[in-house]
Image (cartoon, rainbow, N blue to C red):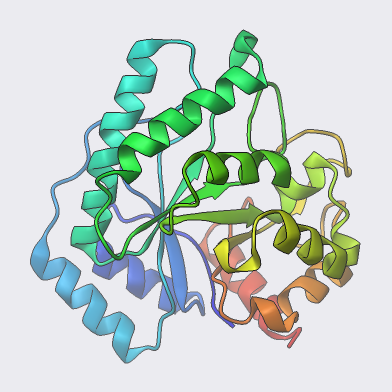
Length: 274
């Protein structure tokens, strides 16, 4: 099992890896820059090399970077789209320099334009970024709950984006158990979920999974994470997900409302399910 949580890299990648190890994790997720946007911190090559030495010595799995929430490829505002594209380009080269493979990206919100126009803009923006993405890195579209005018809340929409990007090999998916529940997917039948995902997108494109419970019930179109076992998903369903043989090599990332002590307890809980 590859399991971890979202941690801060304010003190560098090495310290983040040590923090992850301290909570029982063998992977972690971090923001490429301030989650509300802004200038990225200058990279320290010595810190990066030290971090990777440490992670190799402790058998870490793939690490996941997450783009800021301010990015919106579907925005009706040209300046926001241009900012998103430019900063996303910087981020894919940034994670390449950090030795990180995956960059999770929220698909975007379309506002009053409508979903069809929004999806078209997302495809245009991704095409531009993917045209220069460095080898060894992938953009992972995060499946959303469909709150407000969020895009990417159905497998069909994600598939349409991938098709529009000509099935680019460096475009993958990050699922989120809370988001899936909000969007109406019944995770209690995970086998059926897998079948639908494979038919519409292809199981090989699933590269990361955010493991969260949900404060709101299935189909509520709300994105509010809960601690494991304290929401509408429940521990029985979570166990079915994490023990599925097809999830063995997928990084499971906790984004529950916890501090590191809480994450350590949840990682212990999940490991005990094996």
